Length: 465
Ligand code: MN
Ligand code: MN
Image (tube, rainbow, N blue to C red; front, side, top):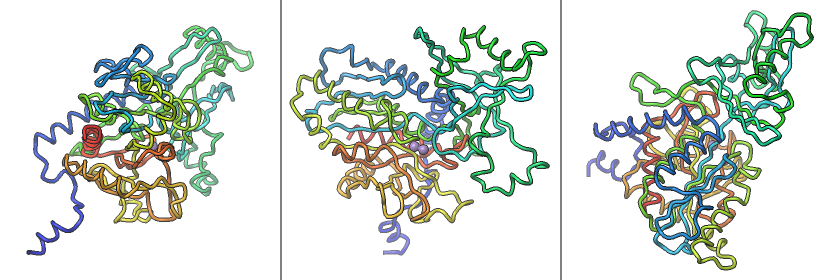
């Protein structure tokens, strides 16, 4: 056998997915990603993801599980958990005791939240104080256009939706930074201290209500907010307002091969998982999709994956199928399989020293599998069993899906985790499986269109198998 042939047969394929792609397939990738970018522009927060996911699901026949008395194979249902996370399912043909197939992504992304008492004035300028959410490099969040998304809930229960900075005619907001001429001291600081948490104050106005009144600019802002929304300063204490980049999702590069967008961790997996579920016919095993909240801050709280709301959703399915018995839920978990659909750090040649070339995810080489996450000596890792990895490889290879198996960076350099361990602790076979991202957690993250479409195909094939 010739060396080239033998190489082809025996060695791992490290080619980019763009090579040898049929024109028709390329067109499918590009048109799918147009839809994806549109979704991203309308879904910058977990609340917006859930709202839009619900709308798309309802168009495809999904119903709120609370409206169903009984369930049969083929039924399409969801549980909206407080508008911040959502669980969807299609009841399969096989007995549910044999387990379900879960694809779980998260809908929250790193951002700046408003503090409960955000508004103040200093020397004729009004500001909102912020508290950052998730792991960010703070300097990246200054001098960029920010939009304000969220809700303010009044004591009478009235909920006001805020969305400012996305329309052409809207103002945007921004956080200032020091001019280089006066930044000598700042520039000597460590990068992580260059901008401090309490420096992330959003500039929101500069016109006073009237002359010779203390805090007149703050007053003017409150007067405007009162006129528009009927709120007073204290109403901010019952609000959840997030500052997110006002950038639009865009194709990136001369060849338009990539997507630049805010919040691709993990909305890229949320969207690909969701659309893959919506396209399913009646699966053999019950297909379940999780779009979770609070992953970026440890999955705590009643909308995070550590909560028991998801278990309750599955229990409701067992009840309404009329099959529930004591401890059946625990048994279902032990027989279940899951792709933890979360993004992977793509190899960045500019910062090559933190990656290990043989075990990195690369842009354009398909969906990334992480057998384990964790840090140092695999501490805190959810490590997929070899038997399960083999089954997933089999599914992907049968469906002609390009995948690569990677770790997050060099040993002892970094580490991280997803929601994988939470389901693994219940007995589910889980592997991390997502799209590689450049500039992860930055206001503008980059992915490959090839990988996005491959993720969609991979989640589809997993449920279908
Ligand atoms: Mn993530
Ligand atoms: Mn993340």
